[in-house]
Image 1 (cartoon, rainbow, N blue to C red):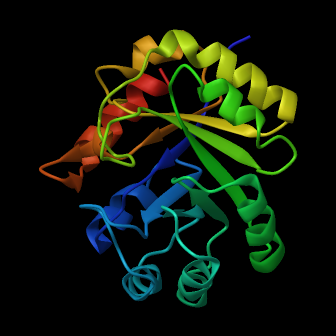
Image 2 (cartoon, rainbow, N blue to C red):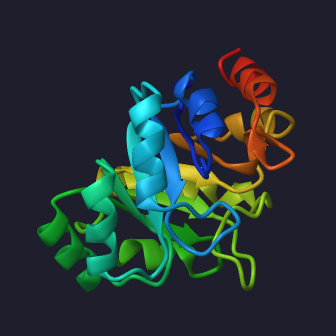
Length: 212
């Protein structure tokens, strides 16, 4: 049975981006609080949210941040989900959840050991994002991984009873190929951008092909 995937638009890095993604079919909007071309500050996001009505849940992306750094962002931004995109251990995430009382997702970079890594977080995280592994880059690469591996990741997520988003290289031209794997969730950043900014036209085209 085909299900409609959950949708997350990540890497919002201007108030214009937020206007585009807030007016969408996404359930989640993501902001990157880590070194990246889409890096933002809590103060910036706080100002944007004060000027745009956002109905989606908010996801903050962090890469090997300390709990204190994450708590500082939470002062400004009412995040619903903390997404750990680095080498955060299960023990770290347990402490993070205890101190911040937020849902936590863990990014798994696809590799031959990706599934075994995912299993280490059983009973710890509230969701996963499966992304491409590109040396020197944490994410937002616009590069796909071998989607033949998706069923294995999704089976493990279903066993853990948590969400599982597929990221990397998804855009209006590739989404139809992705849908044959019946993804639980889809995570886009560059896939709805033109010239580095979220595009109303590309977003609408993507959603038309996704919800056809």
